Image (cartoon, rainbow, N blue to C red; front, side):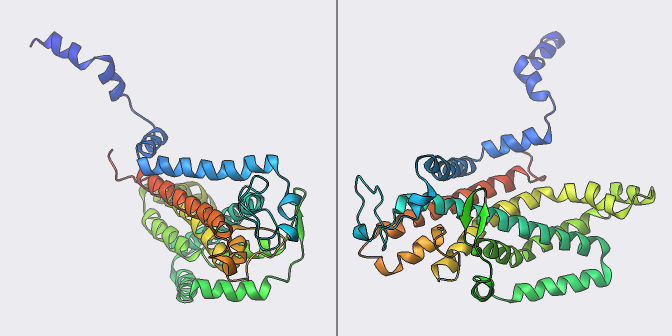
Length: 315
């Protein structure tokens, strides 16, 4: 083969396109889209979000809380597609509005835990010394307490101390805010340890040492040089934390110390179905299935993000 033919063969359009450098964002997106379970997880989450958002366009929250004792424990029918609960409320409509609150609790609880964990991890890892020792001992002490027990105690003690609140025209039980902060305040420890480990490896990097040598303020070094390089594990932890927060809300609501009625969540809908597991399976089947789909979808997406954002992957 001549040299001219060799050059022509190497410069075919497909090979030229493959040789072009790709941005890190595009590489991560390609990895994510090639992860079949992550794509399946996205489809599952889109279904859940569509259910709780589009459904609210057809039904009002007043309908979700409407009590009709004459139709209590009615099986699925043309009038009540997924049946009614023990006091005659429509299970489908309550699952729609309960899903909104469960997802809201999961999202905002993760914001609280991410904020606390990132702050503790950054300060502990960067400053070291007695500050690191103190913060890590507090973290380890929190980790030694069973999370579910701590959730139950705090929810039972604080759940009724906040009155009803109005958000975007919706009247919610004050226990929603309490549960958000309780879950967030009891789930930041793992995030703090992840961030601390990353900071310990990053603070001796050449670009951080160069910034320190140039006299850059500590706050600038932490916020502009260290924090952006910890976003990958932080995004994965936050994604998986939403699923954990939704499950924790379901646990404590099922045990009767979570979000108070009339505000619906998937957890307290399940709590109302506890006495009718055999006689009215539609009461627990709908919210239980929605929790299962949501948690599985979030875990699949989290796995996909972990692989897509892994800097050691060469694919």
